[in-house]
Length: 207
Length: 91
Image (cartoon, rainbow over all chains, first blue to last red; front, side):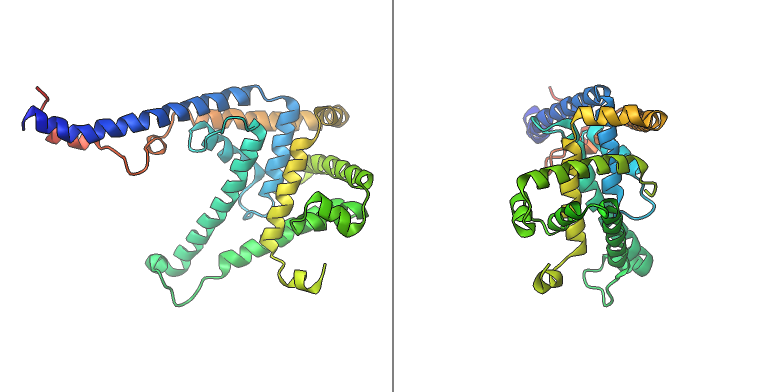
């Protein structure tokens, strides 16, 4: 093979590695930044993180605990598979990673159940019988999670109205208008909710 | 909630919306409130902090290297080892 032919063959690889280089550098920078941010977390941040993980772990399959979820989120952030966007606060970034991991966990669960139910046929594009098990499990987990959150605020009528509004995806203004709440009533209820959540984040025993 | 809204109510969507909103609340808790809770909680609070710190350290220990598969730009993967065997050395 001539040098020219060899060069022609190798050029796409060199081009590819040139393309990869900034990506690798970016990932390593992100991973290093994550490592530094983890080391710098204050006690308050660590507690917030636990609260976030416990909140998200509600509604997951029973075998997945808050610590599994948080551990996986940190590993993904550190190994560069989830990159920390510039300008986003670190805890908000980890909260987002945990959120997307929840979807991923359910997708994996669906795949596992399909494999158990259909074996090699699970990959077939059209199966005669749909496998309802993972969907039912997800619905039950969601009911349980919503109930546990409702129990948390059950004694606070205004908080329960806000929770109902949040479940429906309403904005603060819409919730206030729907339930005729003044800004002061709304804000103080949100503060009470934050305190309850924080306490619950550390005492919710399940998951 | 109206009858129509109940009919269209999606549990998973409701849970996700609720979790998103409550996650924002947790992120917004001021430091002084958490620090007050920590003082109040005593050893329980310390244990909670330690649990997360240990978990973060363990995760860091488990991911000491970047996975190469995560670094490859989609559709531009090169196979240097396989190709090197076939290529004549450059003059």
